[in-house]
Length: 108
Image (tube, rainbow, N blue to C red; front, top):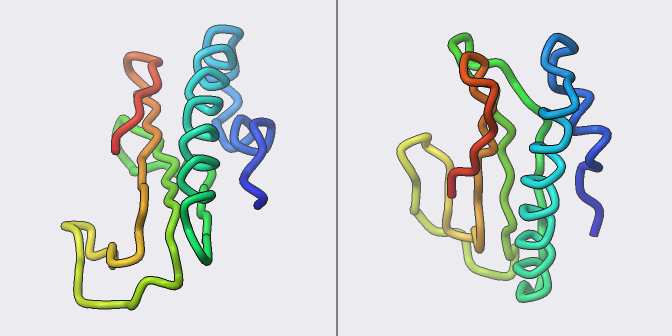
């Protein structure tokens, strides 16, 4: 199983936010998420892992999204309010960077 590396993720954060504190805080969140991803992928018969770089929402946040799915689970009509089909998800998250507070948070 391959996921986005820490360096690849950090490099999607705009350069003006590259600070020692940001790198340390992001690494902590990345290691936590990586552990959860690995744990849940091991539970899947046919795992599929997604982990995107940061994208600007046009507001005060940058968001990286990810999920662990089991493609052996039958697809059905099950959607969240983002209109994402969640029927095969085992775990999903948003890693948010607040550009005003200069803080990261994980949303599951």
